Image 1 (spheres, rainbow, N blue to C red):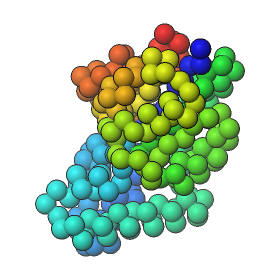
Image 2 (image 1 turned 60 degrees about the horizontal axis):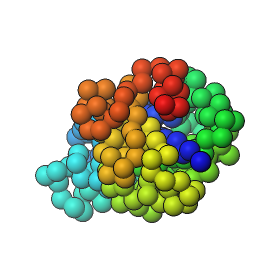
Image 3 (image 1 turned 90 degrees about the vertical axis):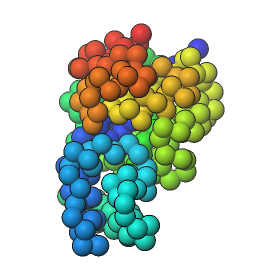
Length: 217
């Protein structure tokens, strides 16, 4: 029976914290608004960009939210094209993915990134070919809606009980729970382990070695 491991991207595969926060601060600056606290920005990572901006501007005007979303996309794209985008893989992640793939695991990604951003990130690190199913925010409702996971299961022909979702936010855990997929949290991302457990994680890995053991079950 095929087994499928689906990973979140930001905060799980790669550390893009500084890039996300700096881009959001600059995007707010384009409308002359004070930037949110970085703690608040980090809390929205994993959501689709429009929903993240909405949460950061709960009392703002819709026209301003749309301007911030557009500015974020433009600024992030310019940083990526300039070669200055820094989203390093977490230590040991490449080796973990390679071992799982070599052992017959199918690998996927379900992320709040755009398709373009996701493909660029994976290509930059030379790991795109390890994944057989990729799903970003452009084509699906934002997490925690389970549509991305459901599409991944259908695409590769795997039943929910043979899949696992690995992520660093409560949105990932809630999404997995909604899709009846086992959820594993990682402690090196954006939300606290306690919160991951409260929202559906079967366990939270502190190290890559722990994560591999949990995935293999």
